[in-house]
Image 1 (tube, rainbow, N blue to C red):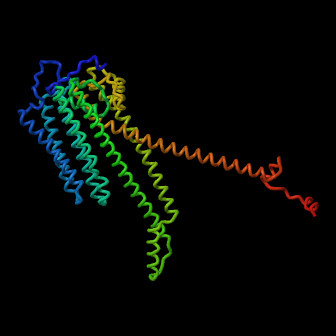
Image 2 (cartoon, rainbow, N blue to C red; image 1 turned 60 degrees about the vertical axis):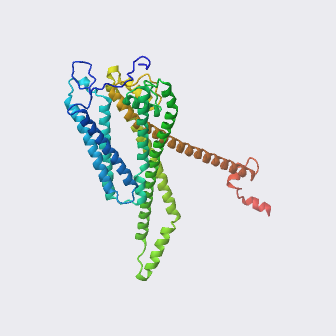
Image 3 (cartoon, rainbow, N blue to C red; image 1 turned 120 degrees about the vertical axis):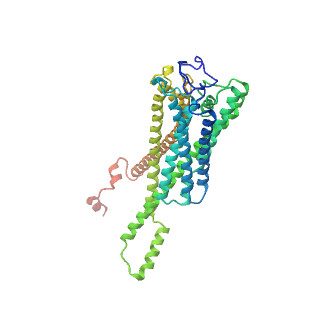
Amino acid sequence: MSNRNGSVRIRGESRNPFELPDPSHSVPSRWWRSAAPFPVMAVIATISLALAALSYIVLILTMMCKRNPQKGFIVTISGCLTAGAVLFSVIGVNARQHPIVQSRQSLKYTQSYFYGIFAAGIYILAVILLAVYTATARSISLSRHDRQTVEYTSIILRTITFIAFLAGGAGVYSAVEGWSFMDALYFTDYTVLTIGIGNIVPKTHLGRSLLFPYATAGIITLGLVITSIRSFGKSIRHMKLRFELQEARNTRLEKKNSARPTHHEHNDSITLSSILSTTTFPQTSEVVELQRIRSDFNRRVQWEALIFFVVAWFVLWLLSAAVFRRSERGQNWTYFTALYFTYTSLTTIGYGDFYPTSNFGKVFFVFWSLLAIPVLTNLVTAMGEIGVRTLVYFAGYILRLGKLRRKSGRGLKNCSDTGPPGNFEEAITGPKYNRNNEHLDD
């Protein structure tokens, strides 16, 4: 389906909780008018958003603080959990007031409804991850430096800035182009992520003019987010490597101490000084062992990252195709069509011949693309690191092989110059001893 053929509803999705093809269904004119008037539901949704914002502010301040972070983490967990529960309760009330009659109407809610579900799910996921980290941090004593490494505030700040940039651009384009805010958010998402589907594009001169600075700043902001993710991964790897090296060093010292002969009491100072000297100035064998551990660790981490991102990429590609096939069944998408669309979107090719038109498809595309593009970037980075390592290895192998051949060629040439021409055996093994020749010399 080409983007020139199908007509695009620029004014946004239906304002009803269901987009039912049968007009006989009586549905309220607003999705939040189910069991309470508009101000009550609007206030509840605003409270949920405010709780989530305050929880993230407390989380950032807790990570930047040098004191015990347990109280701050508990406050953050409580706030996010309350925000998610409030949002889920609002969603549940609306779903209960408007039950599904036909199975094919299961994806006919508005984009606002689905955004609420995804937002509540993100709140709960943040609560689970933070609770696991809090429980682990209490059982493992981390230094201040290690805590700053794990509690990487740059990711949170840059991610919030990127999301605010998307939402702000959506508000601007909604006012300039006359789109709904949800369709404008869908447009800013595939624009900043450089997917460029093209089914919703600016038509006014002002909108096209704003695209130059907005897309440029958005791509830079996206690059900052991806850079912070990579920096966080490197910091975690360095911390794990330091732990492994320290553990190997402690194990080696324990073996040395256990292998020492027992000394008398007057020799205790000598034993202590020898231990301190060994700890301060490691031996050559210990340095070689630590270098081997470092090399093995880097190689293992690179291959683990490559395998993880390859699996994540295929999961995002194959499973998301099944989701889009279901959400876009109104366009008669097959699974192969959905695979084609997700592949061109995941690789940021973005032909635009297929695109989601359902409310759930647009919302799912926004969250899916925000997760898929960083996975693709890290996959390309991991493949590049493995490729460079492989090329360096083979280049070194070829150089060593060339040096060995040159050395062997020089050895044969020198041996051939020591004896008469044609006597190659004597040139290699030396002249044979003959007693008759000795008598002739006398």
